[in-house]
Length: 396
Ligand code: PMP
Image (cartoon, rainbow, N blue to C red; front, side, top):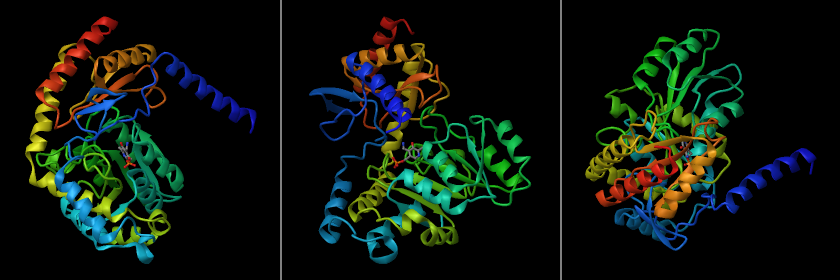
């Protein structure tokens, strides 16, 4: 092992050990029951504010029943890649459902959202192409761009002048695309899709949107960012995960049929790696059906988002531009962030700190996630804990 690597390992070890010694290591916590609105952690019940289970589908009977049926019918896995022997009817049904849900011609699935971004970007873009990204796009988009070999440029977060400054100078590139998150996972704000789409059309670029945090959250019926803005055909490549609102695992791309066919025969994680087990595909399909059949979940989420955001903002917390289920409590320095996190966790709210380098220095934060299944009492109790802790620490 080189000294440089030893140094890196030691630096990380010291940082983690310091947090652990001070009782301020909040990562890798074991959740002892279904990850619903109240969870058991370290033997204590806590109100869950750290989950992406936005619509509360994790424990839904229809999803469990779909899983059992698929298990009975297909067994536990596929023992083969999709192209050869690994495609089941369940995969086809899920992809047809995703395409219908997103109003697209076709869809393809991969084993995670992360892999989906890597697979798609590397397959569609290469040296000589241009990818334009928001500065705070998800790591899997950034990694896909790096791996693709395409030229990539970043614009300032959700800043349309900054985006246009790049596009106006992009005539040398024929194959170009703007890739953004629908909802930014550290901020809880929404990509300015109307402007992004207008600029992309003006400069002949395609648009890809990662809807990891917008499916089930944005739009009156939870169909995502185009529904939220009342737009059609603003997005060329719809990307999403099956691991958040849809409580399974995997990721998808929906779009036009020729592009999806191309991905089926060209993207390396599809060709050289085994697919979702049919059980997880069945759960994902059932989840999409439940989102459509139980609109009251989205209404509840919306009501809870408003109640929590209004409450937390009125206490004086800085929540940035959040308008979604992700509400960051931006504290600033790392010490206060970890101290606040310890206080609220000790009082009974499970929440995680997001610190540098996941966010820029000086913008360390707690990231809260509102769920459709939070009751009024859950939210009121959590608000009370955030208020008492924030005041005690002198940050509000
Ligand atoms: N995109 C975004 C915006 C995400 O937040 C995440 C997960 N944190 C992913 C992609 C990756 O999804 P998965 O966990 O399904 O790999």
